[in-house]
Amino acid sequence: MPNTKLRRFFETLPRGERTDRVAYVTSIAKMPDAADGCDWKEDTSFNAAEAILQNPNLKTLYSTAIKDGCAVTDPA
Image 1 (cartoon, one colour):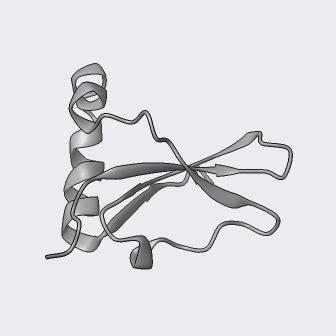
Image 2: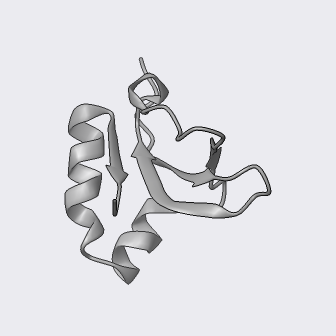
């Protein structure tokens, strides 16, 4: 059975600074490539239940990530 745990990744620059992109993922294979020179770093302290209590607007992103394997916030 595949792992369907919802995980959060931040896109980071080489010096560790974050870009504005965040990926909510249930399937690593569905993650988009990071921008040139960037990497995806997992937020190992992420708790989906706690995060949605603090920000109910995440419900749509969570639904997309569960359905499609990945949802990315991309302010660009």
